[in-house]
Amino acid sequence: MSGEGERGDRVVTVPNALSVLRLALVPVFLYVLLVAKADGWAFAILIASGFSDWLDGKIARWLDQSSSLGALLDPLADRIYIIAIPLAFGIRGFIPWWLIGIIVARDVLLALQVPLLRRRGIVALPVLYVGKAATFALMSAFPWILFGQLDNVAGRIALPFGWALLIWGVAMYLWTFLLYWYQTVLVMRAPADDRRPSVRTARADPLPLSPTKGRQVAESNVPEDLRYTVEHEWVVKVDETTVRVGITDYAQDQLGDVVFVQLPGAGESVTTGESFAEVESTKSVSDIYSPLDGEVVAVNDALEASPDLVNSDAYGAGWLAELRVGSGTADDLLGTLLDAAAYTEQISG
Image (cartoon, rainbow, N blue to C red; front, side):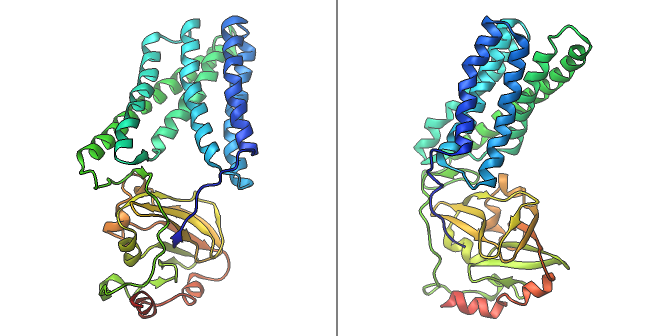
């Protein structure tokens, strides 16, 4: 585990071009739906926009073209569509204005969090998976509702399906609104120098881990039944081909309060010595390096809501991911790593 550099600052990338295209389609969609009243073409634009949203994320991972600009453009496009489409649907009479008010008010009220969080040096609260699900449900509902305006059998089937997605999406939208504001209240109630869990902070300078200086490393902090890497990850056997990985007690102590953990997705490939996860504390952003060539089979979803588990239970509830060994067995891998005595000697310096 070591300090991480900044996210790529490339501007001209394929994902960014797709995000710009999505934004450019917003006024086109509004004209086609409200002025030309060409519902079929408006439906096609929504489908194209949704496909490009899916595609830009895939391309960013396939071509390693993630960028700071892309991280801004993609959610911006989502927010604009989620406000523009309901307003247009309201003008056309497709959905009631009270429902539109809920959707728009939620985003406006969440925007009021920004100055409050910035006072504590917090860039943003972490994205909740239920929030992603809500956005997906809403963006899926809109094309179905639009298609449901057709006076035929297909339209009559599509409309109730679209309404089901819309109601479910709005319910999750309201739930995430409450969760985000609950987190904001916790942040504001905490002392100014006490960064609460589950927030991304602006203070994230790389913190290289070095041997302890006078710190007594207790044997209980280096369990005998685990194996360790020189980068301060611990590894334990789950079954014949799978291991569980986390960061050591020494590492979490050096990093300080962990406020955000970015984990890979199940099914992603990992390579020995390459970063596959990221831990952010109030002191640094640090990469987590894979101890093997293989595949991610599970991640610790509890860290999304409670990243401080890495501090409070580094060897238990604070685990990061489970990896399947690409070749050989878990025992073969463990035999190449440091045992407790060797790791204790390393960190004692």
